[in-house]
Structures are given as structure tokens and as C-alpha cells.
Image (cartoon, rainbow, N blue to C red; front, top):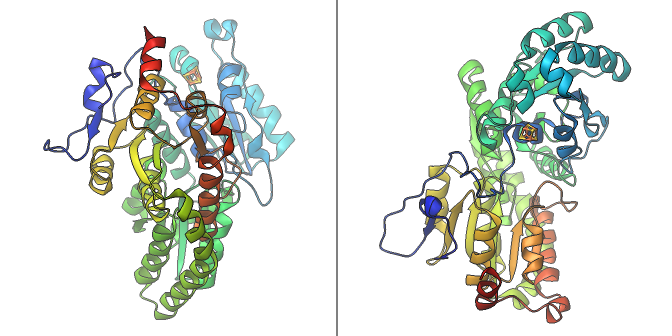
Length: 456
Ligand code: SF4
């Protein structure tokens, strides 16, 4: 395994295929000074709530926090686009001394009448955590004045890792759930949790479910609407995709409303098919199962000949993944296998002990599993494992390109739908275009000795 690992982080790495029993340290604060690839708590809550398109999203803090998360996801909306603004109270030095509550009140009083949102989310940031503004009280009064839910999101950036932000977002959404009318919701109905409608993906999934006769009550949160979240407790089942970000909400709904939940993934042909079969099985509906089988065979028939052609070129190539939540890594490993490729590095920002254990069990021997990595470690591992393509997000892209390695954006900035069967084909085409690009002839891949020379 890579030698370029901080001593204090050695237990956050594991290499499969050795005699050692599986053990990894994770779900903890990042090592100070290690330049973690992770985002802060506030960013964690922002990415989850951002796609609710008819809500006002007001960031109570310095302007930098708002800029950092402005239009942060490629989450599309079929209607309003209020989510794409990044409103801020723009706190400064004077507010640190005298407090920012008056400024927050003024911002809400100006923005709510102007934009007529269905609800407002007010995000707390590091500075608010330090000066101690009573956001709960300000939001409560604004709710009374404006007649819409004004909800504080307790997401002070320093209070934990990104997962704490997911939790803060779930707590905020849970305040909406149960406040809407559930009349007219059919028995075969679901909520889609943990899908953010990147490049319109949630529309693909909704279409499959509709073909099976299953209604979707609330998108949580891609192409989300406040009214749908309010009546989400009327759905028969919660389908949880990005479990790190929305599992807490599913658990809260189960405890309070008895709504069962099921983990699914819409990424990759195997997992997409399994998700449809699992839904049909949950409802015990023979017709829905029949339709699910029809969808799978029809859609696979459409993409398979092209996948076979792409696989011919990709067979034996090596991939590395570093993603936000570990759920995505499971599906990506299966997708790469379908393309004849081998995953040699799999890591995430926020995986849990169970996630990594499951990940290790499906990886081939010699795969590095890593938690909360930093650029130096990733760079070294990519070279050591002689990777052909690196899958990650915006912060991982320059690492790959500087090393002369292909890159595939699988994060929330992407513009290409990667879910569903059509998404599997898009993914394969992108991997093929990247790995087989002639550009790599002109930017030779960096090698380990050269890296060590640079480090020396
Ligand atoms: S909340 Fe804190 S850590 Fe997050 S962007 Fe703002 S200042 Fe930075």
C-alpha cells in the first residue's frame, strides 16, 4: 500500500486480499492539516436541501459561505427555480460584535414577500455558531409574520464532518413532513429519498415506476416541492438511494409515521433492475413485477449491443473511485465489472464501518479502501495502482488530469444522467471516451519515481 500516508491516518486505509481481518477507522473528524477532500457541515446540509426548488434558501453567515455553495448541484427543476439563488445575510465584523439577528429578520422580511416561497430554510454557518444568534427564535417569529414555515438548519460548519450536515438537513425536512394533506395518495406509492435529479435523473426513475403502476409522492430532494415533502408521510414506502444523506429522515419517518424504508441504487444496470424488482416485491403485486421484468428486458435489449462493443476496448483497464457516499461505490464497482474493468481503489468522504465492510467484500484482492482521503494520498495511490480512469467530483478532477489520467465526473456538478439503464450506457460511453482518448499520447502518465523526485 502507498507509503505517502500520514501516520495518524494509516488506520483509515485497508487493502483487500491480505490475511488481515477487515478493520478501518472512519466517520470521525478529519485530521487537522491533512487537507481533506471533504466539505463542511454547512455544505453537507446545503447539498441535501438545495434541490427543493420552491423554497427560499437563506444562508446566515459571511458571503463566502454562500458563494461556496452557490448553485452547488446540477439539480434540475421541472418548474420553479428559486433554489438556484444563493441568498446571504452577508455578516461582517460589526455583526460579530452586535449580533446578526436583526439582519436575519430584515433579510427574511425582504425576501419572502419578494419571492413568495412555499417555505424558507435558514442555514447556520460557523460565524453564527460562534456569535450565538438565536436562529430558532428569529425563524419562529418569521413563520408567524409570513404564514409559511421558516426553518432553521443547524449546520455550523465546524461542528462535525459532512455527515452532521446531512443530519441537520434531515431534521429540517422532518419539520415539514406530516403537515400536509395525504388524501388521494394511492396504496402503491413511494417517496424517492437521496436522489437529487442531477441532469434529470429522477425523471428517468419516476418514469420506470409509473410504468410499473407505482406513484411517487415526494422527490426528496431532486426537483423537490415543499407541498410534496409535507405530505410525504402518506406514501407506503421510502426508497432511500444516497443513504448517507437521507437515511436519518427515513428512520425518523419510520419511527413517527411507521413508513418502512428500503435501500436502493439506480446506478448501473444490475442495481437498477434490482431496485425495480425490490419495489414490486415489496408491494406483492404480480402485475407490477411483470412490468418490472418487461422494463428490464426492454431497456437492457436497447443498451446491451453497444455496451458489448465498448467492453471490447475497455477489458482489463483499471479504475479508481473516490466518491461522497459509499453507496455509489457499490454500484460503480458492478458497473465497471460489466465493462470488463477492474476497480483498484475505492474510497469515500463519509462512509461508515458497515459501508466499508460491504465495499471490501465486493472488491477484488489488492483493492485499496480509503476513508476521507486527501490529494497527496490519492495522487500517490493512483500512480501506484497504475490507474486508467479516476471517478470523482470537482475536487478530484485536477488530481487526475495533472497525472495524465482520464477522469469521469460522477458528482453533483455533472451534466450527464448516469442513473437508470440509459445512464449506464451514458456512463460506459463517457468512460470509453475518456480512457481511449488520443490525448493521453501527448500527456504521458506520471510515474512513481518522478513523483518522488518532485517531493524531494
Ligand atoms: S460554514 Fe464555516 S467551514 Fe463552512 S463554508 Fe462557511 S466558514 Fe467555511
